[in-house]
Image (cartoon, rainbow, N blue to C red; front, side, top):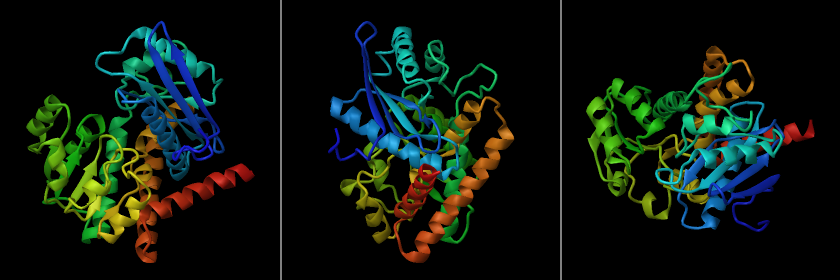
Length: 348
């Protein structure tokens, strides 16, 4: 564990198994310096337990950075359930997961992520109060995906202003990878502004719906990297910017809602050297956790959420400007700021 390449001095990594329900879950807490750890729950059919662990470690670290960059009173944590979201779900499984969260006594708050829905979270909430992203309750606001997508859309415009001299996306060609919850809402925003969209997703029915309502063109999942576009927007799983895909990109901007888009830290420098402006994922996609933070506070306020989102987009612009001015990778600049904020909180 301690020499795992994705281990970054995590405060705690918790493994849970419930034989009766089939639950196999990992909850990773990277930092609680800024407040209780918060981050969604992902359900995915990992090939190995090591892959599940790696995802939990990387995602929880990303949540620490994300919450710090969004100036939220929350630390970073993440949970993964090892299983197929289409075949392995059951009320008993999510109730067992709720009991696992309850056993951590408020050190970690969960919400939905890939493969998990608000109805799943309602089952979790039957066993613990440390849940957000619910449809019912005093501070409930439901699925945070629309807020995340709205922030990513604004972040893409911020990147376009730096890369093309204008934030106007009308006529821009954008390749969107993943058109589920966040990606689908994002496509709606982009289409309304007149962008030309090329989209892909492993769920072909979802692609069909998005194409019908936005006029987007469908491409195969592996061909999305080869689209001659202005902007590539990853909104599915992570590690999509890697040595095999980087050379195929013909874009000037990479900006999307997926977590952990870079397969390795050196990919940020490789993007910069290729003349591609990268929006650090844990900055541009922070809208959802801002929405979750409002729920955790106990008094949800949409105006507070939107004010925080305004500040986050300003922060993204500052990161991009500093990186461009100093000829540094954008991810390096953002991570330095995030670690400084976390360290300051530890010092008190």
